[in-house]
Length: 403
Picture 1 (cartoon, rainbow, N blue to C red):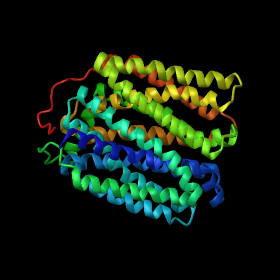
Picture 2: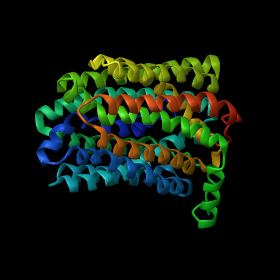
Picture 3: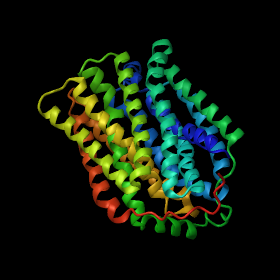
Picture 4: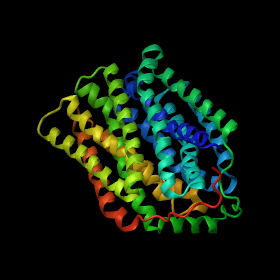
């Protein structure tokens, strides 16, 4: 496969996550009102999706190691399209939550396989640069998601926004069917035997490099998820932004995130993986601390939340490609399983934060500011403490690389 095709496919497969979460965020207050449901139930449409997304990867990962990335992607994306259609037709909040969980489980195949494909084709240092390019594409998709969601909400309500997810999933399925060649290693027989699977999990979960980079990725994703889950309520209901203004905020955060992916590639070429991670942590910690201090000082203007989080968004654009590749790097023959475990940890973190946020949205900015501040500190601890000690990666080439 040409390298450009690889990056395009990766961007679409990874971009399904921000599309699924961001496109309907401006409609969460309307959805709550339309079903007459409490805010905590509306949050479940996001947290249930993310819990199913994380747990399903534990199934998709070994399946992709055994049968290959391509068939798992085709089945997963087909299920995603069906789940999206069912969400549009949901007659109640309970049914919407259930179908969002199905949608999340299917989405796990897409994101997990994308990360595994990078490890299939590239050594870790090169993989971080390729992943960064793909995440630039993800950022472009995320840029368009919130404004498109606001437009669709204005034209057809939240059901129209969810209908667009089915369209995106169908396009991704077509691209995989047309352009993806199999990338998984050929020696895959027996990986699904219970003993072999448990042994693989034990090997991955006992590896310090996996934990150093996984704790980095779940911490930076924890900060991002806190902003995604709380920002629509805080910025619109508490600080008074309009729906259009909120869409502009989400658009600008995606642009800043794209800038972070470009900065990541620049620093990787000059500094290497560990120093890039360490520098990015200064940005994340500065953003989270500024947001928390301003909130405690009584500065509750929208800019006091948005501008500091912009630094965290830059840091996220640095830490996600580096951390995801770092977590999978030591396991070229089990990249799907390692990717699945890393993704599951991130989504369990998001699920826990969703419950925490839903219980603390009290008409103030503190649920948002405290959550981001906490996770920015965790990013710094992982980047400056764990990764330098345990995160060193071998740079040997991958013998079955196809690009």
